[in-house]
Image 1 (cartoon, one colour):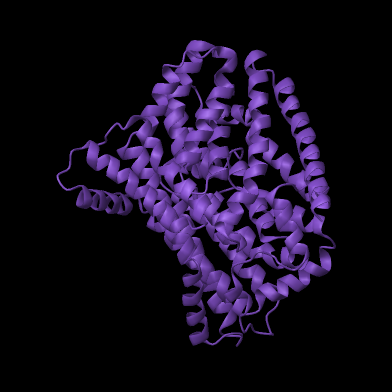
Image 2 (cartoon, rainbow, N blue to C red):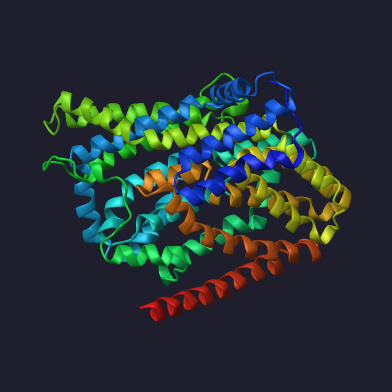
Length: 512
């Protein structure tokens, strides 16, 4: 389909979807209406004879073209794996074991964050695996599912974007290479890490939330409900399983461990580590060349096969019960898969049909931006574009070819800082957007309402983003001084979170 430049109208579909989702508390119909509004704008602009059929036909054409079946299959197989592990009693056994060793809420939250940081290779894999493993522990200590979803989400994309060996590093590297401005795209990516303030401050925020109990806003309300026994979980069907009493800790660890091992091996295999080209015979090169979606499908299938061989011969589950459980687990992922498909579709409508990136590029190019303001403005634009389209990869893929020549022309000293601001803003928008795939998978992995996850973490991510913006202003006017810019951001974050927590606590006491 030929693109149509819709100007400011290209921003309407995500705005409609987000506003409707916040008003109706129902995300699927909101996304669908956002998609249809975008394809209606496209049909009118392209002068289609039948607006009704043109709108519908365009919507479903984009949906089929943007469907990443590998990711849908991975989520579906992972849902089956989680369900049969619970059915065999592995989740219950792990919960009992972890509860005996994790002695308090702080350690439980730190353990969740640490596991999220450890799984740095891919954000999809991170989102669903951490939730599966840690739900029994966080439930035992009455940590809300919204808090669990936040901890998962805040250690998914923010970790991947500063990990030199990850699927995200590969995506960034390919975009940097395309600019032709750097001798080594890997070295350029590594140089952006210290200036990626959003990723670094998100990790600081996670530690503060875990150790300091500094909740505020909707998250504080969710935590108070959890203390009364209302965890906010929406996976009640899984909790009511007639699970086997013979399950052991290994019945949880071995399938999840197999998933991790198979995922790493699959990433290396698709990256050409054992291939004929010697250029990919190193870990960094292979991870940079890998296909994450293929590897994750193979890994989830292999882990499910390990679970079958582990559970059925020992009599934990009959073969019939294992297969029935797998199907039930696949059903639990249906809402998340639907939201993913709709999110990909609205992103495609905005990016490919209505030319939202071109509109944003025009704003950047014609803005007459001064050097000192450039990093902060790039951060804001990247965050807005990523929030609107729900994709960090698409955002930095769009902006990197624009940002590099603009920064070189305005102030060559700030090229790395501006690149970092692009990546940081892309992750910020992706982190808090209700139509982001990682946001959707985080709520699915934690077993909480998607809109509750979005509303409870929005305040946290916006506070971090505000402090980052100040840091980029300092960086812009100090020629990229790292210690001044990062230090000012961290100090401001500590002060802001402390004040907001005290204010929220006072409001709660007064209300009580």
